[in-house]
Image (cartoon, protein in one colour):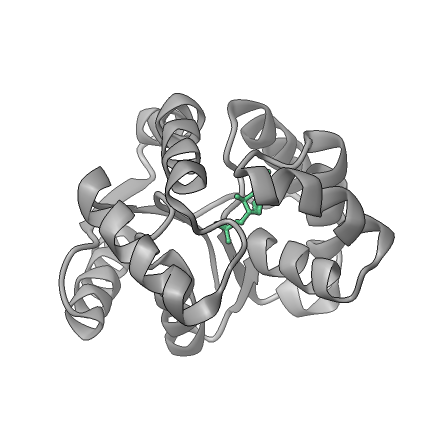
Length: 192
Ligand code: AMP
């Protein structure tokens, strides 16, 4: 049983690594970005609301995001653990997640942060934009998303560091190499 978070700046490969961790640990990976994108594609009311913010590289408001996460975490498949990818991104979301977990008498085991240099990330994301056509992958929006990460999400990382459950992994390198580092770090954190 593992309950964990993966945090990283846009372009750090957290979605790719999350899928691999999920497979290896046998826990469900929940990506708030993927849930939003699926809703945008399906043109649901949630998707229509979220799209405005996503296209600008802004955070979707907590009033929308928190409820969506709470609902997802009440589903049966999270009973054997979960890996949250892309949430929490603000300290207010940390507080909200704390409440959800406290109600279920649950706690997080590991918070994994993938690190990478901003210029490398911009370079990677501009490359990804060509392949995926993601509407939030142009340079101005990419830089805005990175700024938000530094301004808001680094404070989230600091909170988990204070709690002693943070483990950091260098996200630069071949995908398989990063996965090896990630799995080692999780093992070490679980043994601690
Ligand atoms: P991601 O795929 O994790 O990079 O997320 C893509 C976009 O979805 C972000 O740029 C935000 O607009 C939105 N998003 C994802 N997770 C959150 C969150 N925890 N809080 C607010 N907005 C989010």
